[in-house]
Amino acid sequence: MFKFVLIIAVIFSACRTAPVLPPEVEEIVIENPPVQTAALEVLEPVFSVIAIAILRDELINTRFRVSLQIENPNPFSVELAALSFRLYGNGRLWADGTERNIIGVDGESTHQSDLFLTMNFIDMDRRLLDQVISLEDVHYRFTGNAEVTVGIEDFTAVRTSFDLSGNSQVLDR
Image (cartoon, rainbow, N blue to C red):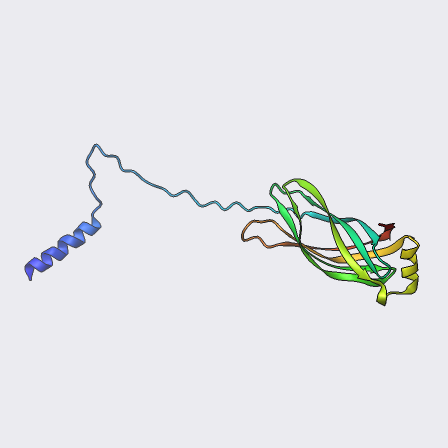
């Protein structure tokens, strides 16, 4: 029993005693530097519709060309990932929907792209159809939401709304 107690006492004393280094070996202290998580500031890209043109294809169906632009002030790439929209002509709904993966923009640059939409005149006012046939300007309103992604994990998409209106030329293809 005495040997058992002696072994236990030696073990406990070894645990409390600091290790002794030979005099020629310096003690090396390894410190972990503090983890720095730099907050990445994401500047909101500037989304704009720079033109809407009505392209007359047929008597009943009409295509729209919406010229979109996104200006990226960030040093990394962004993408206009989704666009939900409603397009009105002379106060009446022409087209609505959602487009995905529209424009990719490099860091600190601006990019323009065209989005093509189709509208059917069957449910439209005859006066609007006559305006398009005679290539007269048409008043439009383009509203919706855009989702811009930055392509970096753990960052949520930047969402922005738009509500633009003006007059558009009708271009005969």
